[in-house]
Image (cartoon, rainbow, N blue to C red):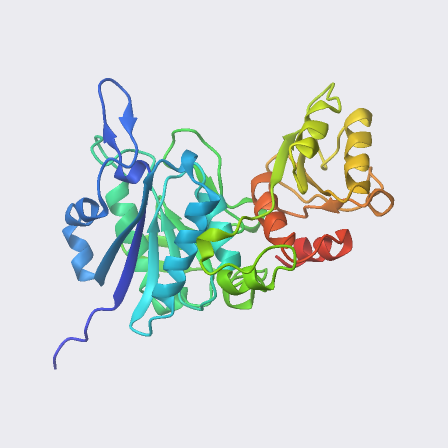
Amino acid sequence: MPAAPLPRLRLLATGGTIAGAQTAGRGYRAAALSIEALVAAVPQLATLAQIEVEQVAKLGSQDMTEAVWRKLAARAQAALDDPAITGVVITHGTDTMEETAYFLSLVVRSEKPVVLVGAMRPATAMSADGPMNLFNAIAVATTPAAHRRGVLVVANDEIHFAREVTKTNTTQLGTFHSGQRGLAGLVNAGRPHFYAPPVRRHTAASEFAPLVAASARARTLPVAASVSEWPLPRVDIIFAHAGMDRALIEAAVAAGARGLVIAGVGDGNLGAPALAACAAAAKKGVAVVRSSRTGGGVVERNIEIDDDRLGFIAADELNPQKARVLLMLGLTRTTDPRALQELFLAY
């Protein structure tokens, strides 16, 4: 019998170390290679899927912006809306991959898989990890078991949920970890093994998806003809520390922040002067979310700080950078701290 046709897959490229090239000495330049060059370097990809490539951006992910996020979401949504496309893979730098992945998990509406992939070593390095990561990512995106699992991150033979994953090491290949909830699965030379479904709302169940519709619903933002034309509310992250005063919090509010995420000590705590500044900001209508700088655990309401009285929001399990993503989107819908808190418990 004739072989079944290979699935069609859209590969969206944004640059990153996976497309990097070494320079003199130990340095390298991110996003030096095109997506066509990356695909050509891994001919085994042709055994997995019919791949359509698109260069959405060409940057190191330290330079990732909300404008690129919106463009990436629009291009991913267009691909996923095509009945002939099985899934989407996105090449991305590792520095901010977790933020992009979480953003897409909130604003892309589809049950098809979206898989982000990157590398810790540039493409021209000795023992580059990008080729196998890319092979595994495409294998994950083309397996039926990946459907309805939301946005995933594949690296170092591991599969992570967008909500759980975080980068934990500056240089090691095993930089990504998924905290207390653990891995979504493993992928061994192109053979995915999933362990569990995601536990919070995402993609097809997200009230922020699709992104164009979410922008049109936002009462405080203009209805834009193009997804790239409307801004998300400004949300700043403030890192708490011993001896912290009011200065950074007041400066962020003065600069126009509509939301603040405090990377607090311990259970999202902060000292008396900074606490008073946050309380004053909340009274002015600035949304204040308490997260933690510890890298793990749950920030709960009303433990050492009276969130009910002060009008604060507890980040639950989200780290500061992901709390910022959710708060930006949440502020397009409401400024009510109680309603925002419900979002942090749902997503």
